[in-house]
Each structure stands twice: as C-alpha cells, then as structure tokens.
Image (cartoon, rainbow, N blue to C red; front, side, top):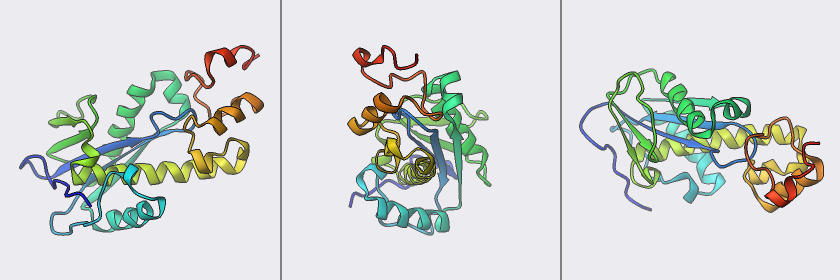
Length: 203
C-alpha cells in the first residue's frame, strides 16, 4: 500500500476533490469533495482505480464514517451535452463542495483544470488521487456513487451492460449501441461509435 500525503499545505481544513465518469459515453459525471479528520486516519486509502469494487465499497463506508465532512456533486448527461464534459466535471466538483458542512480553507483538485470556487485558494494535482489522501478519498466516493447510479440505469437498459462497463466505451458497449442505437442516457455530443459506423446511427 502506498503512503499518501495527508495535507498539501497548512491551511486547515483542506478539501480533496475528484470526479468519475469523464470518459464515459453514457450517464452522469459524479464528483466528490472530502475533508478528512487527521485524528481518524484511514490506512487503506488509495487511488480508486487501484482498488477492487469490494474494497472501494468498504472504504466508502469508512470514509463516510471518519471524514469531517464530504459532499457529492452530479451533472447528468443532458447538462454534459449542453456545457461540455470539462465544464461539467468542474461543475460537479463545485456542487460537491457546496455540500460540505465545513467550508474548506484550501481545495486540492485531481487533474490540471479547475475554476475558482468562492475565492477559496486551490491547486490542481495531476495524478493527485495517487498522492494525496483527501483526493483518494474523493475518488472512492465519486466512483462508488457513479457505479451505483449506472447499476440502477442498467436495470432499464440491460443490453448496454452498464453494470459491467459503467458506461465506458468498451467493445461490448459500442456493439450494443450499434445494434440498439443510443439510449436516453447516452451523451449525444460524444463519439458513440467509430466514425465509419456513425452514418445512419441517428436516422
């Protein structure tokens, strides 16, 4: 297990932010913001992509139990098509920050793009979910919440296999789009199929 940095600087409290679902063809983008409690360490924290689904669920409960506060922000597929995925990802993080019961003194963001939130100082960290505990915690909450949403959507649209691919562009997902067409939850501004298969898809 890697050793994650608890805080980036000494402005307390510090919130970590991350999102899940940016590269998906369907469903929302989901973000989380987490302020960890230094007195309640979570030993097994790691980048959500490096954890099994079972471990993520276990850590989700521990994060929600031990964190000083956390928030979840969601931007659905319709909004994504209206404002583009970059703006939607940042909006989801802002919505997550709005849910925090304690206003952070500093915001640590995974990635390299962000827009200021309430004039609170922030810093972007590429691969921050593998370096900072608060971002890792946010990545786990965002991932598990989005997986839950996609599992629910799967019940009404089982042929897209969202319970397995969560809306990412896997071969099985693209094959189902080619066969059945896009669902009401697909992001219509995304390239749902390779260009040589696009003709006639939306006729």
